[in-house]
Length: 171
Image (cartoon, rainbow, N blue to C red):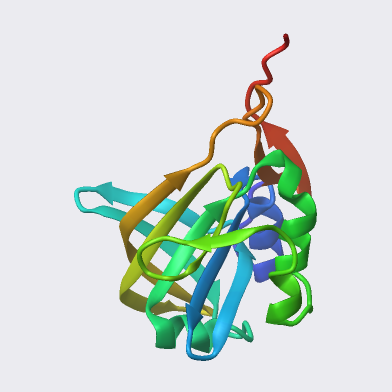
């Protein structure tokens, strides 16, 4: 069906069919650690290494990301569904970080120890687009986890549900 007029519901329904990686994006500063679950993350360029991260401006942690100007993108594995739900919930920041084991890289933003990969970033530019802020982030450090037990499955979101992608080695 082709529509001449696109409303927000039609757009959201169509976007639900775009498979996306599930990430937990975190920051840290004088006000503590904060984070949210995000699917709107992508590579911009490898020279210099740069990611784009989108965040809703009405998010209660939005101001902390603007203030801290650092973030870590933690790409979730298949085992992180509960952690993703915690960071997408109404839990307070302290309760969210009770899920998972956390460390730091160069910027001090929280890094999930067993994330498939974590990108430690400095926010270099912020663009306001509609309801969201678009962060242009220079990657200053990367931490890639060792595969656990021969599996290296990623957590993705498709049609409003979690799925797993990747290959499982059978021994």
